[in-house]
Image 1 (cartoon, rainbow over the protein chains, first blue to last red):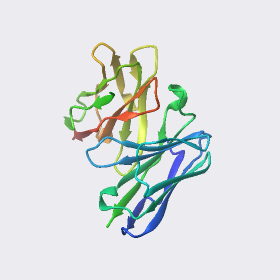
Image 2 (image 1 turned 30 degrees about the horizontal axis):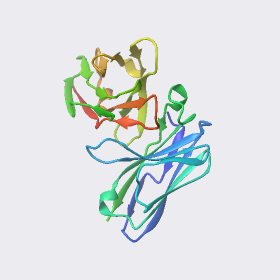
Image 3 (image 1 turned 90 degrees about the vertical axis):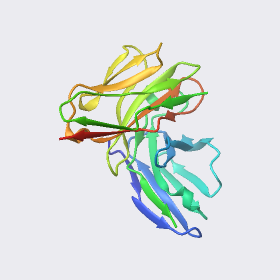
Length: 117
Length: 113
């Protein structure tokens, strides 16, 4: 599935930098997600947007700030990150969220590999 | 509490041999079940899913999985693997109440020529 794109694919940043990750889906979906994938740990769901409204924030530190200007685009703004934030950040989308079932099947982008120095 | 366990972190298997990747879950409610595959430097791709109906689910690339409610398992199988199946495989659970997805820690499948 190539309907979800993410940029950049790789990012190196210092702890004082500000950067943004971008996700775009071309599937006509209404829900979008940010996940964090760290080595040997389960994927961690960070944020969920449904029809541009944030519906889930799983205790994510405020140095991660999501933005969803429309149903096709999702951003993750990063500032004053820590080295332990280094990970693969995955974006996903689905037709809807909160209904459980076929419409909630998620499709993932290729991820942004983030390294915080 | 919900959880997903993939007991095998690494599974080496010879080409054309069968493979089974195990997934067990714990949940107090009914669940929907998924298997995803992640090739190197790529995102997760949906292999198959169980939402309802037949407990034997067939997916892409010749994979299938069987939902066993009494054993709370959703093991992934393929009768004959190829080199191209080398990847990381993730099991995921979506309880039919609440708003969460739970992923396992993944199983790294290495197909040996």
